[in-house]
Amino acid sequence: MNTPWDPATPGLLRLPSGRLLRGRGLRNGLPEGQRPTFALYLLGRTPPAVEWESRWVRWPDFRLPADRPAARAALVEALDRAETERVELACGGGIGRTGTALACLAVLDGVPATEAVDYIRERYSPRAVETPWQRRFIRRFR
Image (cartoon, rainbow, N blue to C red; front, side):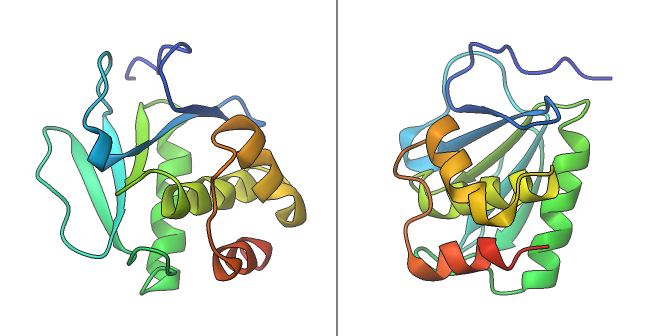
């Protein structure tokens, strides 16, 4: 079992189950402190190489995942791994795609889909989830 995130880590989101996940923008660089043990990268092109295990979901900026079933499977894996590992979700800026993915994880963790955007904006970033189609994706996410 890996050490969980330090609760003082910037960008952490605590889900109702208590699981901690870190969201961040890759353009902001790697923060000081603990490194993830698993990361889910939400990008329109191949992510940079990292020292930890990672998975890539093809997800262009301001859009939705190219393969929605694959994205759902990756999010389920991230949620499962967050129980015992340091899991990071990241896109370019850490707001739209990352916020959308975190909201979907909140839905999987028990937050009603109609409340997930507010949940993420209150606990992660007030700017999270940028487009109407990202909000609709979350409302329909199961």
